[in-house]
Length: 486
Image 1: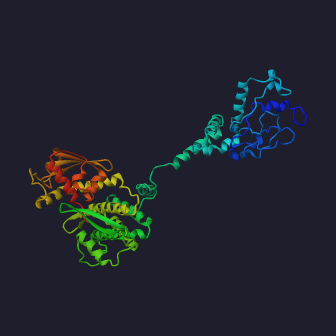
Image 2: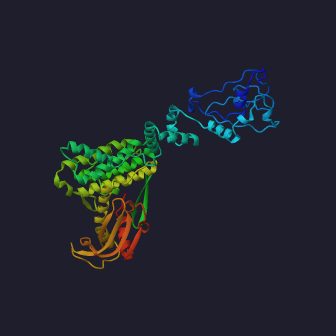
Image 3: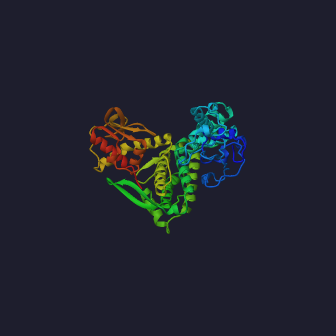
């Protein structure tokens, strides 16, 4: 009976086996509050004293007979947590008024029923709201089990869960945020496939077109202060590595000064102005830097970019014979198609120098363009070897061969991006490289070989694999490095 003398058998059944203090409440949206069934409380005066933890101070407390634990209301779906044990007198169930021992279920059944009551039963609305947290693996173990069980029965939620998991995968991508370097060419190919250009860019000019566009995108993306960031230019000279410090603006001025050689071959104005401007790329650069006082700023970008556009336009309009038009570099000359490929190579190399100086991600050229750059270097090696031999920097010729005949060769195997196989004639610049007459083989990565040609790495550290005549291998590696210049 309660304190007011009324029957309380039903209440006693609820008291037995119930836990006294509920656990921490979950977020409000984790429960369907409309579905919660609250246990009716017995009427009577509220017991005095600290009968509940501060966490549930707002929960109603009812008076119970002596020896029985006070009970607080536990909402459906929340697990109850007991306080630290306190000393209580044992209660004889036979002494409880109205208690029928034979009518009570066994203790194991009571425990199982209590555990079942503590398992959350979530509505469809709540489970749907948990899908985002489930996709991020942010649910508790109980919520995860409930959601996954629900997904086996609810097709709309299962479909939504798959979409959310795919979206989470995009959030954790490790890929670079830079645009694919081939994106521009693919977009242009798609556009030109629908509406071909009246005057298309020659295929041999596309590497220069692509690399100047990539470098210009980098320059547009950096701040004003970055144009004064120090850049270290490196090349190989007199069997030693040489370095020169300038700024980002100084590098673009250097590119524009050397581009003037191609401009002169196409009948365009030389950016250096006077007709007697030097032909040597190094002297042209020194002349431009000396005339630029104070140092160049980002204002140099537009003249350089305008010149690159003019070179591509003029090469496109020059006709089918323009590819073989000679471009003089002072001590040597290159056909126009090779000169523009050389300028594309230098744009990439110096674009990498600038990117390193301003901490900007910069990828190598496309495999097709890189392969053509490597091919140009391989075709220049026999003549470079002959020049080094005349200067006493390479081993003497051992077996001269007539022009066009197979001669003693080194197999240059370039692996990876833009790779391939080339056979470098050793003794005569006009002899044909031959697989059958190869006396040595050297293997390098494609980008690593280009860094060697640019003078950015030492010849003795470049080769990943060597086999055969060590003297021939050394001559080819040092000749590759000597192709570099300011």
